[in-house]
Image (tube, rainbow, N blue to C red; front, side, top):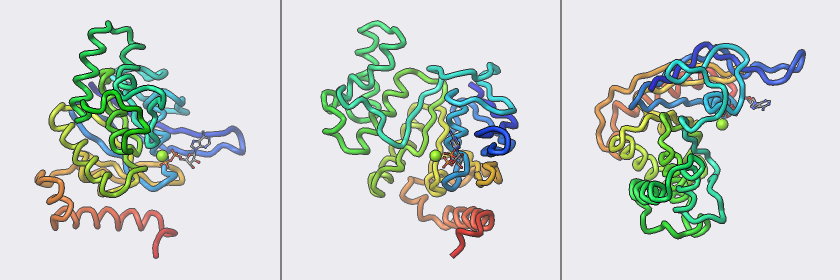
Length: 256
Ligand SMILES: Nc1ncnc2c1ncn2[C@@H]1O[C@H](COP(=O)(O)OP(=O)(O)O)[C@@H](O)[C@H]1O
Ligand SMILES: [Mg+2]
């Protein structure tokens, strides 16, 4: 799998009211990679994701998957959003099965894969629960299971843990990291949380607003200690501070 975003510009509105939201954004993602886009609110992260998802059209430039231009939504891209997007009237298992049923898989196949992916996200025991009976973190794990079950080439995660409390957020970060290591999934994570991006991704692109653009790109080469250790290791903290400084320079109005 090769996702290529090349010189993408996006404007909303027309004529004098047109607003350039993305300016010449380029990056790529290969199978097994975990790439994060990090930037403050309004830097165009969700717009990048919606363009890759085919929910919005680009103004100029190109987005392709394995050389094929993206022209609309497709099951080769699995999506997880910040707000729990589960169907409230369906059980956890029915939510996971939903996309696969649309794909026209056989009943047996859907049933087996549903159990498998509930197992993968550690929620086999909650198969019959309705979303409202599950915590926010569990609901997001179901949303991830649902996205993975459709066998996407790439998982697109837009602030997936943004609505969660800090402790749950940290355990979900650990969960996603382990899932990536175990299943070798390919993921694009969008977040405003620099720490989250650095903990999870092997490449981090930093975005700045007005207009939204990539301003820096870092390859994560720090030793992969267990996440709790990595979070507080001097090398990690130094890298995080260095990048945070750079972001503050770009957004002077956020300086104290
Ligand atoms: N459909 C739209 N119409 C007009 N402006 C939009 C639309 N979607 C996003 N924008 C604008 O694009 C900019 C980037 O938004 P977004 O991609 O949501 O940023 P982020 O996800 O980084 O917070 C914002 O200024 C936002 O107001
Ligand atoms: Mg957003």
